[in-house]
Image: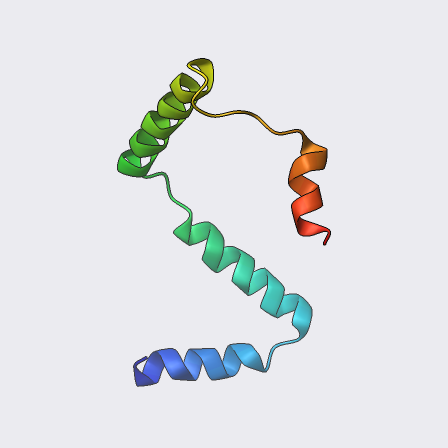
Length: 72
């Protein structure tokens, strides 16, 4: 992290919590841009998963089954 960025961070850390949260939200929103390559890869993944499900290679689970894994 360069000196200027470190100074910005130090100043941001002194902000009230509400303003820090707003700053974080703005920064994350700025990073969340559409990416055609990632979108294409996800579309391919979705198609592959649907084919696997329809052919019986994978099964679906109920929400209760999924959540029980994390409730132990």
